[in-house]
Length: 161
Image (cartoon, rainbow, N blue to C red; front, side):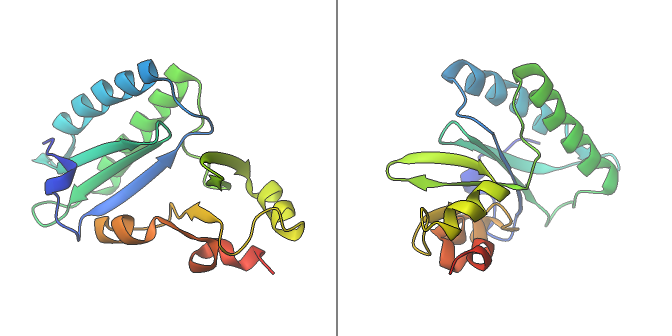
């Protein structure tokens, strides 16, 4: 059951899928429509799942699930991954590779393989104050407060001197 992302409780589980490139407005509209349809139909063991989503910066798909009423099961999580894979295939983007880093480079959002981000850290092209997107947050509250953070406050800090 699709709900407005804003209405989800802060304890809701979140999954963040980052695109390897900025999405066009047409692609965002397509993703929006397909995600609305998927979340309206998303169930776990026959129970409707109360879920919402938002698309941030034409680059991130954030799905939130209120687990107070029903939690995602293995099958429902598999269904969501298959849904994301279908978006990847249709649009020609990578949304599932967690070994990439997205961060602010001035006013722009940059996307680099982890190996390249490590080199940039070694060369001091990025610093502990570079704002990164911590896509490992688990709850809506963490997403709202700890998603866009200085690298020193996220898992990225291990690569910085």
